[in-house]
Length: 103
Image 1 (cartoon, rainbow, N blue to C red):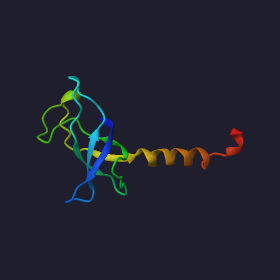
Image 2: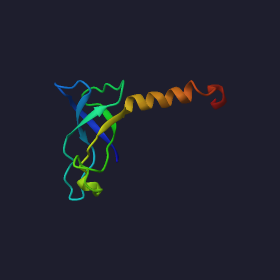
Image 3: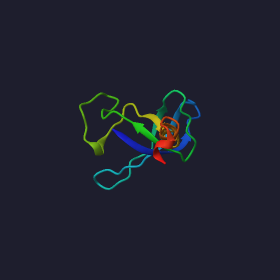
Image 4: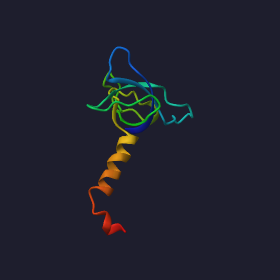
């Protein structure tokens, strides 16, 4: 599952682990609980950054697939920050292509 989350804090024990607040709601209308996520190599989000997370649908006990609103999330990973994704897209559009073609 892919979702947007807001970074809440960095773990005191592991500098590569972050507490994030997923920005989705369960079917019953309750907000998703905060969850610890690991950041991919080189990603260092700041508190309150919007990040893109990927998460498996199985829980830590590797039980069978669960529906969206009961996601156990055995391995949440921060795969990018929206700031870096937008910068990459702008670099591609402005530097990767000949801008004169668009004028």
